[in-house]
Structures are given as C-alpha cells and as structure tokens.
Image 1: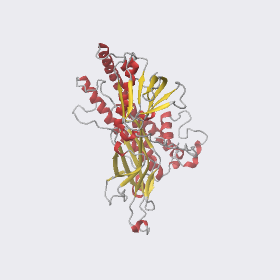
Image 2: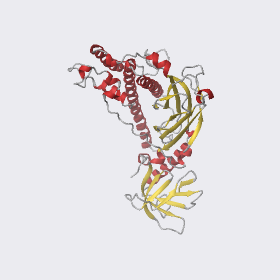
Image 3: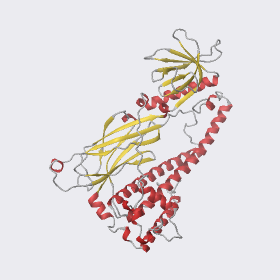
Length: 492
C-alpha cells in the first residue's frame, strides 16, 4: 500500500524491546551492506585498472593525432576514477575499523538522512579573451590546444567531448548535458578544464609509423602485449591495499605510474559548484586559473564559466507516500470523502480511486509553509487524525483519517521526512526543474574507411577473417575485443 519502506518503522512499539531488536537488526544489516559496498568498489577499481592498462597499450600504438588525444583523455579520466574509488574504499575501511573498535558514531538508525537526487550540468561555455592582434588581425602563430572538461561528484566522474581550440573561437563550448545520479544535497561538483598543446605534445608523443604497415609478426606481438596487459591488470588490482593504509601508517600507493609516450593534458582551470549554485537558468561562475601564460597549454581564459546547473531530488520525482485515506476540509462543513492520497513533490493529490491517476479529484499544496500535526485521539472518531494547514495561499485546514493507527504514524513520518528533504534541497523543491537527457551517441559502423586503430591493424592477407592479427586457432579474447570496441564507440 505504501510507496516508501516506512511500514516496518511504524509497527515498532515506542521504547519496546522489539525496537531494540530492530536496531540490532539494522546494525547487522549495515555490516552486510558495508561488505557488499566493499566488493562493488573493488570491482569498479578492477574494471578501471583493466581500462587503464588497455588504454596505455592503445596509446603507445596510436599513429593518428585524434586517436592519441582521445586515448590520453581516457587515460586521465580512468586514473581519476581509480584515485576517487581508492579514497572511498579507504574511508569505508576506516569506518569499519571504528565500528569494530566500538567507536560507532550516532548512526544507529535514529538520525534522519535527506533523500538523494539527480544533478545535471549542461551548456557549458568558457569565454576566451584573445589579444586584438591574434583574433581580429589574425596575426601570429595559430596556437591550437585540445581541451575537455572532467566533471566529478564523489566517485562518479564524467568527461566531455574533446574540442580543438584556436584563436578563431571566442568560447569553449560543451553542449551535452552530464547527469549525476544518487547525489546528496551536500554535493560538491568539481569542474576541471584540461588542455594539451596539439602541435608540441602530439608531434613528439607518438610514432608516425602507421600500424597498417606493420608486418604480421609485429602485429601479433602487439596483440599479445594487449592480452598480457589485460590479464596482468587483474593481478595489479588485487595487489592494491584495500585496508586503507600501509603498515607504516602511510597512505596507500595507488598504482605505479606508467611511462607512456603521447599527449599530456594539464589542468588549465577549475571550480566547484554546490547546491547554492543550482538555478533553473543559465548562470556565470568564477574559475580558478592554473598555469601561466608561458605554458604551452595556456589559453587566454576570461576567468568565468557559464552553465546551467539543475537538480531533481527524489522527493520531487517519486511518490513519497500513498494509500487510502478519509479527508474533509473545514469549509462548508464538508462530509468525509474516501480518496486515494499520493504525496509527491509539492502536492498531496487525492484521487477517487487508486487506479484513477489521470486527474486528481482535488490537490492540497505541500510546501515549506505547510503545517502538519497529529491531533490527540478523538473519542468520536476512535483514532488519531492529521491536520494540514497552509500559511499562505489556500488557508483551508484539511483533516485526514487513516484506517489504522500504524497508517497514521506512517503518514506523519512521511510528512516529516518530506519536509526535511525540502529543507535540505532548498530551492530545488520550489518547482520541478527540467533535466534534458543526453542525446544518444551514434554508434559508428566499424569500417575500413574509419581509419580506426582496430582496422589499422588489419594486414592485407587477413581480410577473410575477423581475427585479423591472430592465427585462426587463436581468436582475440572477449576482454580485448571489449576494450577495443568500447574505446572506439566512445562509451567510457
């Protein structure tokens, strides 16, 4: 009947021995959840390590500028994810150690936690400030840089598309929305702008020899190295210290830095966006610029970033509570009405029937100015009731009756939680903000005309089989195929 798992909490007698048992059960459940979270974080680390190792091999063999730039971007993003996951794993291990030592915090199930939600950033614009001689008079060397943004909330990290910037552009634009899920209201969205000098870094970073010119033996040797890297990465990931710190008390060493030739990205600017920056409009934020003008990756930034940052808390998009109730208003001495109530967002919608969700019979506004209280047991009604009064607008007082005292407690708990969620998400609960979904990325058909690394490895004598570089009795492993296809479909 109810949309949130509030029923078990409602059926527990206050101050009873049963409540203590439930708390103990929650404690045991939290230990199991911590163990499951450990496994999930370690699984994600192992995946990123495999991507990291495979990308290093791909980068070492790149022969085209665009491929090298994309591979280097993927490598940087993968390293950032590994670092974030390792940090989270260390914190989880420290929390578990504190629990075992009997120093549990006040998380025994009584502390109220706000709901999570979606946070989306889109239409990123970073204005440039070129000199007059460079932009208007088109004088000087055409300085080109490859730039992208790395966006991070906790362990969730996304990177934007790559943009080649020179003096013909007045703004660096990243149009596609990036959506973060399961974000708490106290989130910190870090925006980092990375830059790489195309002429200097790429020309010196990789060999100009094309893989299509490699002999069959060299091609097989390259594929064998890919196979070795994929299997070796699993061993490396298992050697990572998951205990949080080394025996000497120092921070764990992440992974050995791999010496890979190729483009090198540098942090050009960064900023942090929080809940106070969320608005249902296009806004400007300050950037902290790194580097100096004499750096090869330097670009004349104006010092601001413009973007649209919106959020959708779960309390605004999902049903907080629902069930059969009796309701009446204090106007005109209305009779009791049996309805199906749904608490969602800024409304308590009352339908004639449970299946009748097209149009509610009437709606009660629920916002920060709404006052909800449980009345004393009425001997004539033989149960407690709930009154809802709005301080502004519709000042009608509504009285709600449920079919059981447990249901009354569940509705009150739902209202308390809902008001707490709204108090934490603040302006995000004034109205439902619209989040645009990213456009579906086109899956490019793999053909020889693409000039991708996968097909540059095809030798003339291997056009009759899909396993181009290996003997017929040794197909390419599914893991390597996955690495190659994932990289060239740009689905990291």
